[in-house]
Length: 256
Image (cartoon, rainbow, N blue to C red; front, side):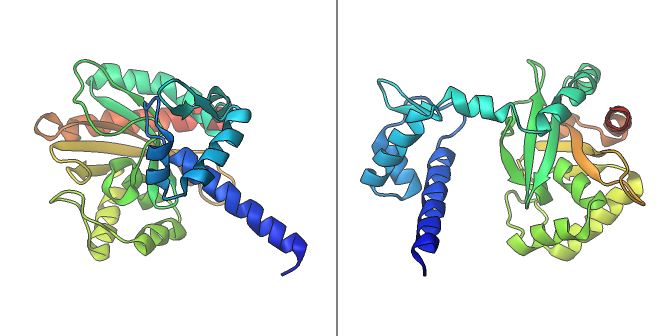
């Protein structure tokens, strides 16, 4: 290996370590000690200390009296992500969905084998659930994820199956053939349903959101969902308003 290649490899290694360190911060955490960050990442304390110093210098991490927290510069960078425009376009339709159902309303995309939640609306009448903005769940056990897998490209489903289907609840679909059958049913009815597959007692209905047509067919760029307690969620009543919101947002994205 040449000196240039060795330098590049070392840089990639440090970038990966820095990314792992930033990923060790959980949502809402403030003041995490250096030792705890080292334990979470599996990195030596000396390495974590050096990385924290560099990340603090550029504002990606801030140091407080009780430890470290994510910095404002990281938030500012997040505002430049292209998905921000999708979120802004979706908010009016999500607000209408919330007013119609008073349940948790999500906007999500698929990243690899996961669903990533770009936005979430909730309220006092909504059931408290594990999802959060910026959070991830396996795509195969969420309504938004299944909506995107059902109408997406074959490589998307292959990525999910390649990672493997792990059981999260007694109702999680963990057999590839059964998941594929569920996606066929999703396409037939026009929306996806999650029956306590990610969280016990919680179910959801989701529909795909399409971007502008760039070829012979359009593919979904996101999905919207309504999520609530299984005992009170009626897909036959919720699905029409979820599908209507998804269609309206798709038209808005095409117009833009």
